[in-house]
Length: 224
Ligand SMILES: Nc1ncnc2c1ncn2[C@@H]1O[C@H](COP(=O)(O)OP(=O)(O)OP(=O)(O)O)[C@@H](O)[C@H]1O
Ligand SMILES: [Mg+2]
Image (cartoon, rainbow, N blue to C red; front, side):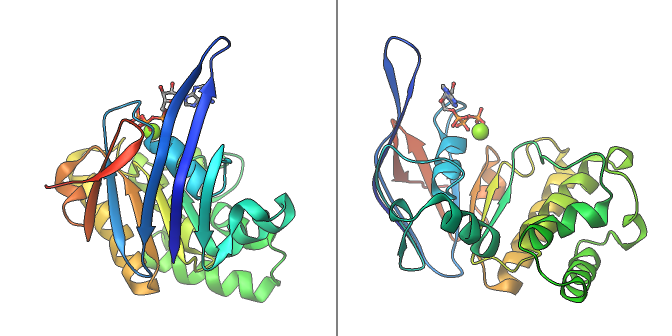
């Protein structure tokens, strides 16, 4: 489903190059869920951005659904992001000026789906994340957990093949974190989407099919 081979990514801090991902390899099968753990600054967000094509690797291959992402242009990449990939950011990145419903509809609107298709997909996921009563609320009037539920809904509304979640429970209290994780995991299973999730929470990490540790730019098997 997603294979990456020898991924390298470095940041240039002016004088020197700082290597963040160093010949990293990973394979995630269809429907599989994997957690990525690692110290702050180890490169978890960088890895998720590169794999989801929000950012480009310096070298290496990323193959999503038999497509070599490094070989396709920005326009095609944009379509793939809109159709095959869901992303939940570390700090949800919702648009405050839009309502819950409008935020969730965004990927479908950008992909120019027709109105009835947008409406039925949005209504379905709003029910799934239990936000029907809040559908016309502005984002700034929502609690942290509710915002994260909107972000989850937005990441799955287009039925992606793979969901990348960057510490989706990082800013929530323990109870809320458990609930949000369970919701995300259930929805990924229900949609048969693969799930790649960065987290600092070992308890949550252990509930996915596999755990990997990001250390010195590569992934090693976790034993948690
Ligand atoms: N655009 C950038 N330019 C330069 N350095 C960057 C850039 N983005 C990230 N870095 C550096 O790359 C390293 C990895 O950052 P990243 O955000 O991927 O870590 P992380 O594992 O997600 O950390 P956290 O657990 O705190 O979210 C950090 O040292 C960071 O300062
Ligand atoms: Mg991060």
